[in-house]
Length: 207
Ligand SMILES: CC(C)(COP(=O)(O)OP(=O)(O)OC[C@H]1O[C@@H](n2cnc3c(N)ncnc32)[C@H](O)[C@@H]1O)[C@@H](O)C(=O)NCCC(=O)NCCS
Ligand SMILES: Nc1ncnc2c1ncn2[C@@H]1O[C@H](COP(=O)(O)OP(=O)(O)OP(=O)(O)O)[C@@H](O)[C@H]1O
Image 1 (cartoon, rainbow, N blue to C red):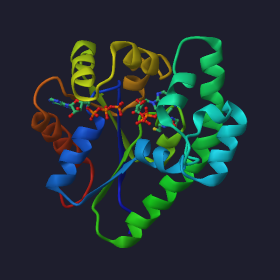
Image 2: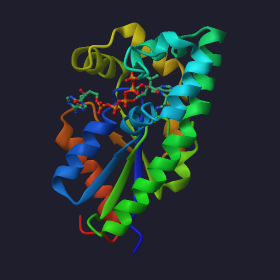
Image 3: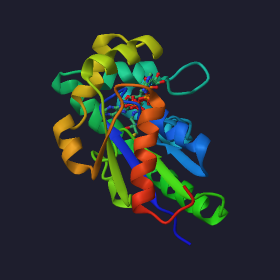
């Protein structure tokens, strides 16, 4: 039997992962985190080789592994060179991420253990992965709060936040492409309650 696949989109630090994980504590929800899948892909020997060919051996450490902060420094920024590098990186890794995500979705369906799958992918729309989703939610949070949460909890500078957000679709575009908006300016449980209400209206699942 097919299970609904949904996704949360929004600005950086809007709480997409936090809300997904919290819902998974309440119900039989499988969360597939595309950032984590992206990290796994960076260990694949063919990917490492392609990255080395594109960006040089300075992004590889002594153990032959790709070093994420070094790649981040090359791809996130506002110069044409950053943009070209980011496109190159995405061309290498996105097909692998997509195929792993598809596999995880099929595995979760086959397991019969879940009532809902959440694809937690910051670049859902940019990469065209919304095709696999039945419903997309926009998580709305003021920029001030997002920046505060990310600098406090993730150890990012404001500059890091802005450089990454610069390379994503605008919030207006993201909001327009989603079916529903969830507010997450206050406590997390209130955001999860909003999501739960919409899901109950939409799907005949055990939520
Ligand atoms: C550049 C890399 C090595 C930096 O790793 P790092 O551990 O610092 O970041 P991480 O992967 O955990 O991503 C954290 C956040 O950065 C932003 N981000 C990541 N990749 C991108 C991208 N291609 N474009 C814009 N923002 C991005 C997202 O908001 C994401 O949630 C890594 O982000 C990467 O390989 N990115 C390309 C793959 C990708 O697009 N991943 C996102 C899948 S949704
Ligand atoms: N309602 C909330 N109250 C307090 N802290 C929150 C709330 N929602 C999220 N956070 C915290 O804010 C930070 C950013 O949240 P999270 O990592 O879920 O964002 P994200 O949208 O998945 O980010 P990214 O776009 O980078 O993937 C986390 O440390 C999270 O615990």
